[in-house]
Image (cartoon, rainbow, N blue to C red; front, side, top):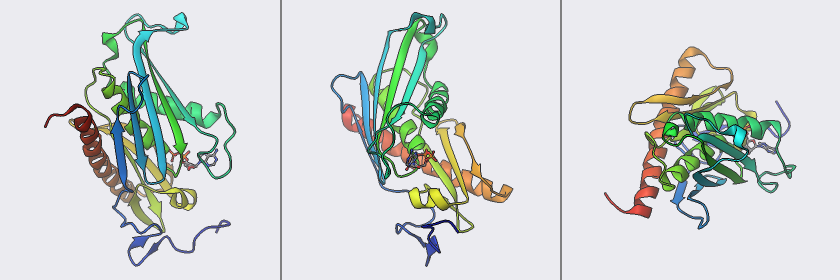
Length: 239
Ligand code: ADP
């Protein structure tokens, strides 16, 4: 057992934050919160607070990053120094470079980049407060910000993780579960087709547990998708 590790993670069927195993943390999404960005989104997901801003398609600098057949989608995942318990050193680190790439790959599967050759589409994802699951929160917010910018895409992409604690598969780990849990499986889907746009796995799961985790995360993504649509409906009206 590690220092600070709780003895039990599930007591009387409830997790340490009071949730059922298949229950997401509360989610609030608002589109169009920044005046100077072409599209933006503010998202609260449990203790995660994320701001996403999208610019473009716009002229690309440096020029050598231009692609003759499509727009260059550039994503910048960044954690604020005050977003975690121990102050995070400002500036890029290995984790933020990796997460920026993971988020970019996920979003590339839906944005119609071929419509805007020689341009840049820049998406900034600022983690103001982190409580585990920030890549999923970042993808979810970025996708709404891109839609808010009016950039054509196949679909919104919702994202949600599942994992394993106390030998049980649960959805949407919060930080204590993430720190001491046995596995973490972040997923993103393209809802209309059911395609998987992101699938990662940390830790160990049996094949049955993996299937259960994937199902729970996909179900979580579908709930997140409803919240994304509601946020855009609220901003732009319509049924
Ligand atoms: P994700 O946020 O997508 O779950 P990780 O598994 O890498 O990605 O991180 C899990 C959590 O660990 C973060 O959400 C955050 O709460 C915490 N964390 C990440 N980086 C740091 C850091 N440099 N200092 C303190 N806590 C951190």
